[in-house]
Length: 284
Image (cartoon, rainbow, N blue to C red; front, side, top):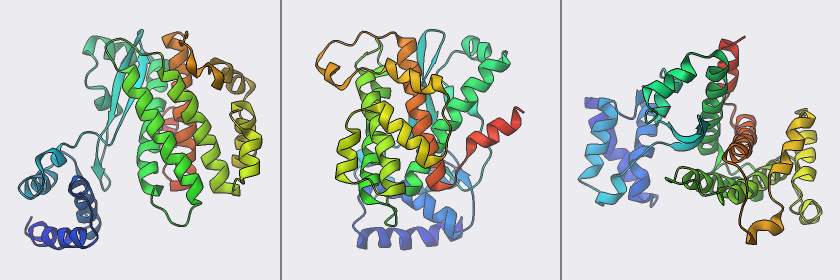
C-alpha cells in the first residue's frame, strides 16, 4: 500500500498536466496503478477503495459516481434484466452470474439448472465483456482508421441508449431504432477500419443492413448462416423511424443480441480479447 500512496500523486500530476477531467481520473488511475505496480484488483478491493477515497477529497462529488464499465439487457422469462460488467484491473477471476445480481435467485436458478440456458447466458455475458473491454482498449487508438472509430463510438452509444430503454419499467419499443442504427454503425466501422470505407462506398451501402452485413462477412471472413442474414428482416426500415414501433420484446431481444454479437466480434478482432472462446472451451 505504501507504493500505492507514493505513486498516486505522481499519476495525478500527469493527469493534471494532460488536462484529464476529474470524472475520468479514478478509473484511469486504477489502470495505471495496476500496470506500473504489476498488480491485479477488482473495483471493490482495498486498493480500488483507497484510490476512490483519495480522489473523493480532490474532485467534484458527482465525478466520483462510478458504476459498472458496461451494462446490457438480457432477455429471460419475458423480462429484460440488467447485466453489469464490473471494472477490473489486471487478471482476476470473474463469475458471469455475479453480473445479474438484480435477478431474483428463483429465476437465476432457472438458468443455472438448464445447460442450454447456461450456455445462452454465458455467451451473452462474454459478448458484453469483450465488447466493453475491447471497445475501451481501442477507442483512442491513433493507428486505426479514425472514421471507423467514430462509427464504433457512435454504435457504442446507440447500444447504451437501447439498453436504457429496454430496462425501463415498461419496455420502450423505440429501442429497436437504436439497435438498427447501432448495427449499421458497427458494420460500417469494421469496413472503414479494415478496408478504408470511402464516401462512395458508404453511400453505396446507405442504410441497407443486408448489403453492409454481406460486406462485413467478406472482410471478416466470418461465414454467417442464412438465418443470421434473414433476421435482419426484424429490424425496421430506416423510413419507419417516424412511426410507432410494433415489435415483440422477444424479437427486440433477438436484434439486441445480434447487434451486441457483431460489436463484440469487431472488438475481439481489434483488441485480441476473447472471453467467448473461453466460455465455448468450457462447454465443449
